[in-house]
Length: 205
Length: 205
DNA sequence: CTGTTTCATTGAACGTGTTCAATCAGATTG
DNA sequence: CAATCTGATTGAACACGTTCAATGAAACAG
Image (cartoon, rainbow over all chains, first blue to last red; front, side, top):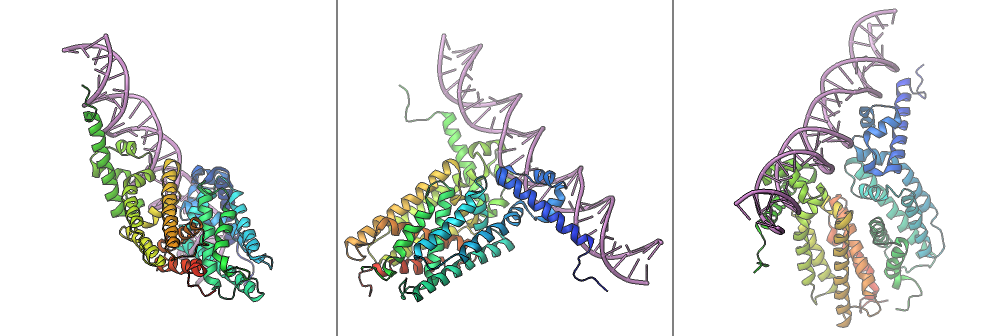
């Protein structure tokens, strides 16, 4: 009887090698930054040849994405799940800060990580676009619930406001990695305050 | 009497070589894209050595900036000067479309041009940050004038709204080069409509 | 059990961006 | 006018990312 649930040795080895390569990649990228890490240093750290490293990442940027995408996605997903029923801006601020911390945790890499995720190509472009769409959808859902409990004007189109928030957030992140926006979460908060300004139920106008 | 106004031969030659190198760089980048163009092909086109090309651009990205910054700056500055007294969103839409056209005019290069300008490093980071600050200031001024002629609520903080517009604009541009925002000007318009929504004098709420 | 197929792995070769010592030409000085 | 200084130019060397033909090991078929 064919053992369907037990992959054969080759598949096991492949997965083990892939994990080893991606872990070595993550370590090198986080320690040395994208440019500082080389395919050769990653290969040496993983104990394989450069051809094997390239086998698991079709180019260096793909390697970066493959090494770090899942962890950042976990951070984002957890922060989205934690969107609660507190004041709208506080909840959004928490979301922004959680993602910021994930970037700040890898200072040598934050600029390139952001740069390459925003401008990814091929399959990874689609994955990052999907991720942004998921965040926008989650934020729109959060805003809809806020409207339903009367914390936000019913006139506001949640998906547009979510896209606005995402725009502010990414712009703030870019400003932050570029050193021109030292307090990105505050920046997002200020813009979102104006954006929602007349849409909160107690707006005086 | 020292001829102050007439640079010597070496200075003349340096400027001529610089212009030649940057023009060759611009041609190659626009024709082949950033990755498609090589330092060697630029050198060949300019009739100089690779060392000379590197002399006029400390690295390939700097070469890109040096080759294209002034032209894009001219487009932006002209569009800013044309901000008039028409409906606020129409004027901002025109500004957005003018810059979009400048990018669209070089399809092989638009993604990298945007990517490298947003994530520039060193002196160029400062120049691009200054450019963004100039745009924000000009848009804030435009919004202030709109308030003064009663086309916009006096309660709106112009510099915050300008930062919001810039966020929408860059996010739309990124979405456009990534293929997820086919109508970036419309995207900006939609978000800005919501942002200004309750701030126009005829807002029903 | 053996031959064949499949796929992972290897590492040298290649093209690239970047560096730098050597050379050359223009400017300056005495 | 010659010697010296200064800065532009050169292009080979280097390290890098990427490619690919060769090799080896696992899987499969008979």
